[in-house]
Image 1: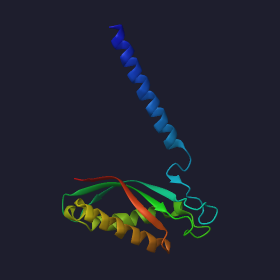
Image 2 (image 1 turned 120 degrees about the horizontal axis):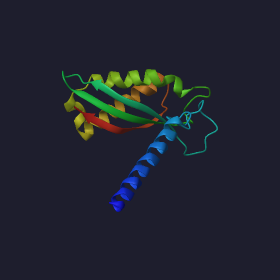
Image 3 (image 1 turned 120 degrees about the vertical axis):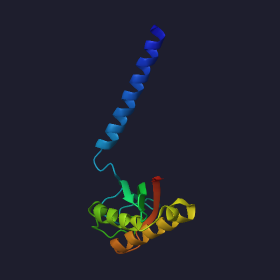
Image 4 (image 1 turned 180 degrees about the vertical axis):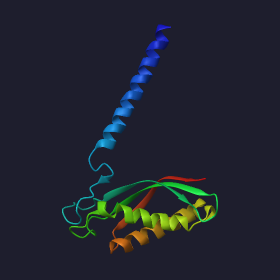
Length: 146
């Protein structure tokens, strides 16, 4: 019985450590933004800014279908005008993403080609919103159609 108690104690300790690490990451100021300062300049060549958006749950065009998606936007800091704060654009960017996704059917987004088309459409709309080609890439980190 003593060996099992030790195993349970180690498991609990591992879980607690994981929770502490996750909590620390969530509490880090600006944790959703890596290098997303005020804008261009000051970045070394090859560096990019990343803007992580919280999970979206969006109704698809067809009745009864939902898409749960989480994404990261990779921004080119050299293309971001000085003084432009990406944090101020999170709500408008989320609005653009919701607009694009809500006009798609499950069939539109399930194939690789469909996901790529959605990615390009979102990229185009975000760049238009920000006033220039600033979005280098979009990564879907979760993508579930229900």
